[in-house]
Length: 124
Image 1 (cartoon, rainbow, N blue to C red):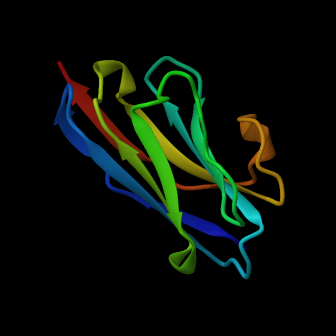
Image 2: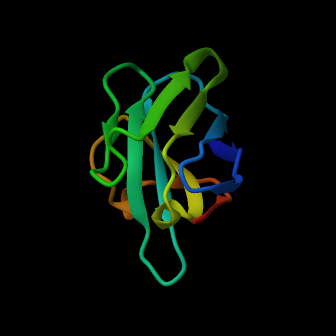
């Protein structure tokens, strides 16, 4: 059973940076996709970025393209989200999610594994 553990959230001022981590356990190979979602109060869950751990290019939502970078340490089964030029609109609970084999789309129902979430606050 795959388990995900996020870390790295916190509070920053607008224009600042944070790096989130998502460590996956209970995996025996790299045939899975890790994605970052976020949910702000009163809003739906939004897919932010995803990466297939078996290789390939990352995908970013338009809202974060050019500001966020997702990359992995496959030996550690860990996904990172480097967030720069943070804006108050980026404030949310950030979740890491995983699905086997396929790395396409941000339909949360397609992701059976979720972390507990980590809070990101951005003050103006």
